[in-house]
Length: 95
Image (cartoon, rainbow, N blue to C red; front, side, top):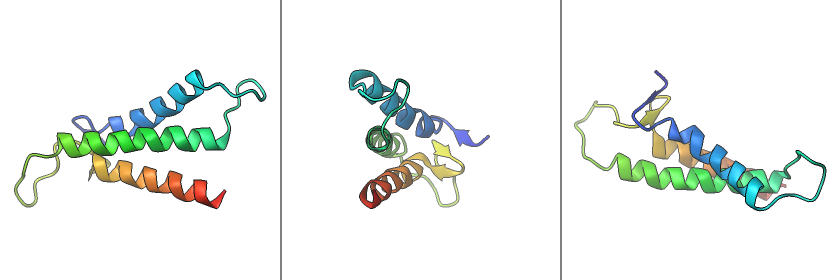
């Protein structure tokens, strides 16, 4: 499997962040379109929540060579989500 434990939340929380932002702060433009800034903010907030969730879930010490209890693509979920936060921040700064 590509995830173990709650590692699937690495995908779910950024998507939920985008959808919640789109629902509570609708855009006045064309129907069905969401501005890039809103997508980046929602994805970044959702991924930041996932970083904290991953740190909390994977806080138990483990022996060397033992995989994390909650991972996504064999990387602990907090580090995979941190990459998403950094990507959202870099794209936002470049725009």
